[in-house]
Structure formats: structure tokens, C-alpha cells
Amino acid sequence: MTLVFTILFIALGGSIGAAARYICQRCAATMTSLPGWVAIMIVNVVGSLIIGFCVAWLTDEIKAIHLADLSILQKTEETIAFNELMALLAVGFCGAFTTFSTFSLDNFFLSIDKKGQMLINMIGTTVLAFIAVFLGWHLGQMVST
Image (cartoon, rainbow, N blue to C red; front, side):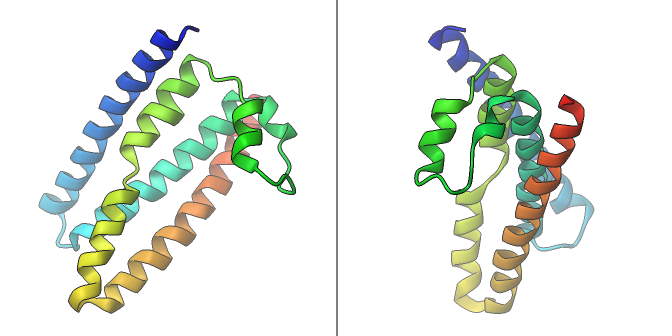
């Protein structure tokens, strides 16, 4: 796949992911009485599940990565063969769908006068997103075998 096609797949996935995030946030705002940061937390957890699944499912080479490597990001970049689905789903869709910049901004605003909610959001999102990547990874491996 050429660089141009890779960028087009990322852009397509990104536009779908951004629209999906907006829809999730609007649905949470109009259909529930939950604070707005809860929708962000749900999106981050779901996005983490999806990215864990996609990376495990779409890459055989990822199994060669060991946590003892000094530069896990560099090893990952060298090992993963990015194909159309990886560009579309993991990089494009999940990159736009998950909202850690919004997550950080929400935590900043919560830190002003709702520190308890900020802690729930920070800890809940981080722990649940990690568990979701773990589950997505194992689901992806089951599908790929």
C-alpha cells in the first residue's frame, strides 16, 4: 500500500471515528442525566477495546514484541505491517474516536471545583481502558487463530 492510500484510509477512519465520538457524546447528553465526562470515559474505554482487538487481530508480527524491549514504540513500529485495515481502524478510527485530549481538558475543569469527580474519571478511565485493551487483545488473538 502506498503512502497516499495509507493516508486516505487513515483520513476515512478518522472522519468516521470523530463522527462516532460526537454521536456518542450527543446521545449521552440528551438521553441521560450523567455528567458529560462520563461519555468521554465510555468512548475511551470502547476505543481501547477496539484498538486492542484490531492490533491483535490484524498483526501476526505483534507477537514478537516483548515488554522487556527498551523502546516498545520503536519495536512496534518496526514490527507491525500496516495494512489497509490497520490504517483504517486502529490509526484512523480509534485515533479520532478516543479522546484523551478532551479527557485531559475535562479533568482540568473538574479539578477546579469537582476534585472527587476528577479522581473517579482519571482512575476509572485509565483502569477500564487498560482492561478493555487486554480483553480486546485476547479477543483479537482468538479470532486470528
